[in-house]
Amino acid sequence: MTEHQLSLSPFYAGWDVYQQQLVAAIAPL
Image (cartoon, rainbow, N blue to C red; front, side):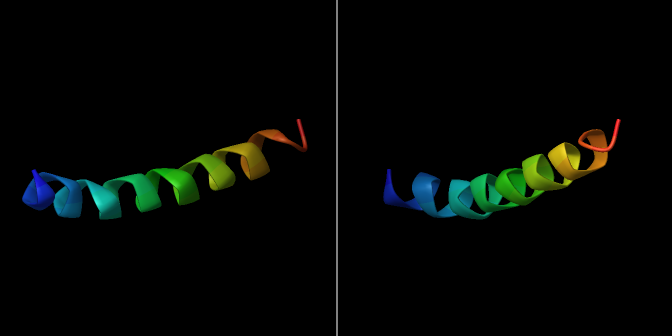
């Protein structure tokens, strides 16, 4: 279980950054 969480941590961190960039790209529109 711990191994699974460790592999998902970077995924969620990357998704957070992706969401911020997506909002920043759509905001001016």
